[in-house]
Image 1 (cartoon, rainbow, N blue to C red):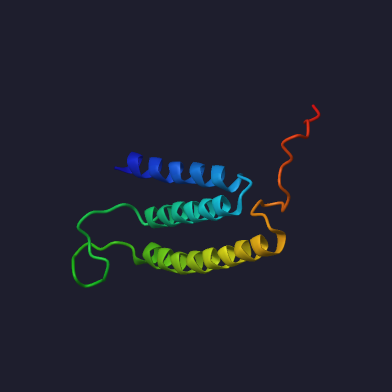
Image 2 (cartoon, rainbow, N blue to C red):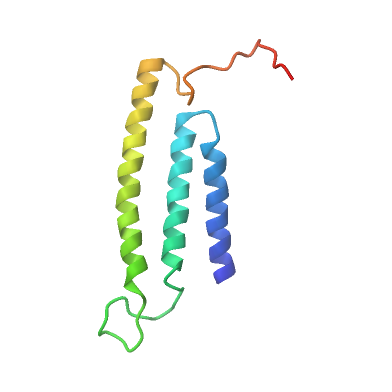
Length: 115
């Protein structure tokens, strides 16, 4: 179970980094979202993966740690606000520059690359 969980977090991180390094703003937003999902899963796993344990004290003799759950809920709210802000910036940059490339310039297809 832990190996599958760690593999999913690693896959989300690698996909997120790959998408952040792309030249279009939409893929950068998707990459940031994937990285925030990976961080949320990592924070959630810091409280140890446990089955059939209560999240609230007093309902069971064994309980899950509530701190990682609170951290993940806070991170979800902050991640949603950050994603909304970045999407608004991307829309504004597209309207001002006429391009959705991160640097604002379209790559020239006819220009030869110097090595």
